[in-house]
Amino acid sequence: MTTSTGTTLVIGATGTTGSRTTARLVAAGHRVRAASRRATPLPGAAPVRFDWYDPATFGDALTGADRVSLVPPLGDPDPAAVMLPFLRRARAAGVHRAVLLSSSAIPSGGPAVGAVHQALPDLFDQWAVLRPSWFMQNFTGTHAHALSIRDEGVILTATGSGRVGFIDADDIAAVAVHALTDDLAPNTDLVLTGPEALRHDDIAAIVTEVTGRPVVHRDLTYEALRDRLVAAIPLEFATMLADMDRAIAEGAEDRTTDTVRRLTGRPPNGFRAVVERELASGA
View 1: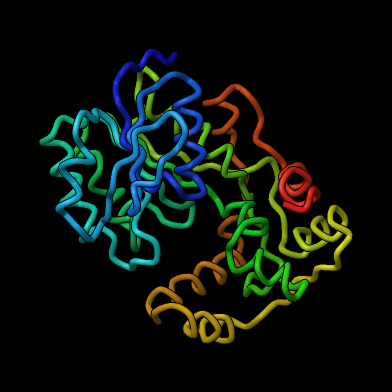
View 2 (view 1 turned 90 degrees about the horizontal axis):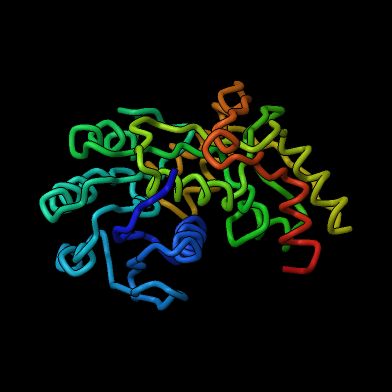
């Protein structure tokens, strides 16, 4: 049941999940402070400037907020260094519920945002950690996979024949709104997946069928993927991403959960439906 009348600070409000979470909160009648580095206006929300690396932006962003939706700083191998000081300040400012976007690949106490996950229950009485599988939007938006599909008709991974329960960002946002506004906070971590686990070969075949443009999955070695990533991002982060692909190849993401249905009352969207929605029309 949802009866929240507070104000939610959505960090990363212009991003893939943040924009969807903001839109759903506004549509449901909740007050939202939409935080981004440029304080970008979003319909129905109050824009506010926020930068993880500029503590001077923290106070204004937190004004009036009693709950916060957290998206970690992109590409930072040690997000806890900037996130934990903000969270302590948020608690002191009156925030009583925090919902963190993490990853199905990162458990509490694990690398990167895993340290924030581990600290959250000690900081807030009401909390949740969303641990979605890999995003379906990685193949339809501005992610490297989507770009290589458009430019070269290829998906490059080191996942082999490993399967992933890819999830629609719309479903992540739907769960986030419940976690933020339901009377009872989850007070746990929530592993989020789509309805089926797919290989990247399956992804390529579905994109080909829906768009009519040939797409193939090319499997790289772990080392080749890491070296390719290093050309664009720091070695530590590139190694972590390559490690995640290797874990997929070994079966770490071959699962589905009922979390989306349990929290939202409807089944999660399938990959073909998302591709038809976002690519078939030329989007």
